[in-house]
Image 1 (cartoon, rainbow, N blue to C red):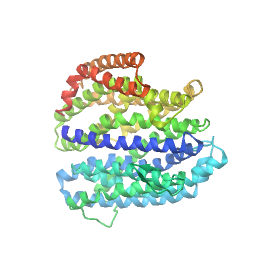
Image 2: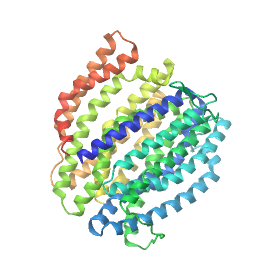
Image 3: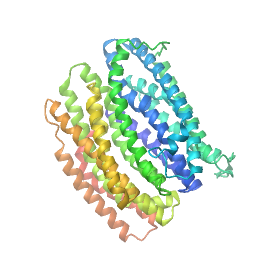
Length: 504
């Protein structure tokens, strides 16, 4: 699991570098304009559809059952189950995509919809972009399941490459399809198609195709065979669907948080984009640490429980949580302290927009520990094939988030919406932690890691802040150097957790 986690972290790091590069290109092309707000808002409902089906709901419910089939019935039976679920997912996605395309205008303009605060022209643009995005969603309905199937076979390389190629497609859209004039790179001028914001969506579609194609060799390697059937009465299909029902509602709750966020933010120009960019920055450490470990753990946790080894299940979760708590605390503090000047230079922002994005990012980073811990906690329940507790926890998250968003938006603006998300996710993590403790054969002990992480974060944050105050270099260079120095200063405090990471 250590090798897999580090492999995933490496590929996720490359993916996030490309994602940041993509956002830099887009920000410099469009600025934090109403058009960019429209593009970001158009992703909300299509993301909801993807996450409800293959992207989040099916994958999380599917991997434990597929792992169990691998252990008990062999690979041919597992591929038969995979085919039936993939066929069902594609058909459902196709039907819902058609419905969503037909209802795009009212879904955007409705008071509780995607962007009621936009002008009529921008709402029409959001609807049009959303309809195009549904093509990519249909492709992802299969690609996301292929990723889950390969991970259940303990194949992580191709699924880790897929998001990288997805970003490559989007960068192509931003560099080539969108601009009016060709961009010169290394003396070579790229052609320009002048599609504007529509070019970004075509880049998403190209990226989705690449995301799917790169994984096909994995299916060949593991001797995938397609079964042209669904079979709702099949025992394996029913087993997946029993987990899927609660998981779909869980993912709906999660996506509603972001739809509500952008609904409120649509009343202020640039707020939707600031929240999108701040979330992207949070996702860099969250993905490299939390998602990498959680993704590597899920098939193993499922196998441990299928074999009845609850003691090793307990040790695996405890080691993972100690690593997450100890490492993410200093990371969140150091990045929150030093990120501002780097954002201004990278995205070409003015002072006011830099301040907005910086405070939104800091508000998101408050919840980094909770986000990363949830990556393991949620998977620990799905490994037990229990989807009800994560559903209850996500419902609690949604209610708390809506209350906090209403309370914090007026005094704090976009940063208040980000802070509401951080606090509600942290509460969800605490809730699941308490429940999980009761199910374990022994207590999951992380207090020492929590203390060391906090001390490391305080030391690293103080050093980062001091360097930014007193070192006479350009702001972005000081920002980068200060975060590196702060991170290094925190390492001795969390060295024990770093060593645990090497022995997951």
